[in-house]
Length: 129
Image (cartoon, rainbow, N blue to C red; front, top):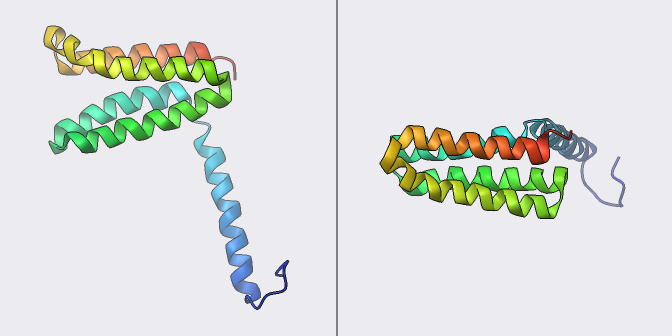
C-alpha cells in the first residue's frame, strides 16, 4: 500500500519498493570486494583499456571510477586521513608508473605499482575487517 495519500497503483508502488531493496542488496555485495583489489584493478584495468582501445580518456575513466570506489571504501574502513593517504598513493602510483615504464617496460611498471598500492591498501584498510 502507498504510505502517502496518492493515486499510485499498488502494484507500481510495490515494484518501486522492491527495486530499492534490490539496489541495497547489490550495494552490500559490491562492498565485499576488498579495496586492495579495486585499487589494483583500477590501475591495471585503466592501462589495459587505454592501450587496447587506443582511447586514453577511456582508460582514465576506468582509473577514476576505481579510484573513487576504493577511496569510499578506504574512508569507511580506515577513516578520512587514511583514505587521503591511500588516494595520494593511488595517484602517485599512476604518475610514477610512467617514468618507471621507460626503465622496465609498460606492463611490468603497471603491475609493480598496482601491487604496491594493493599491498598498502590491504595493510591500512582491508586487514582490519
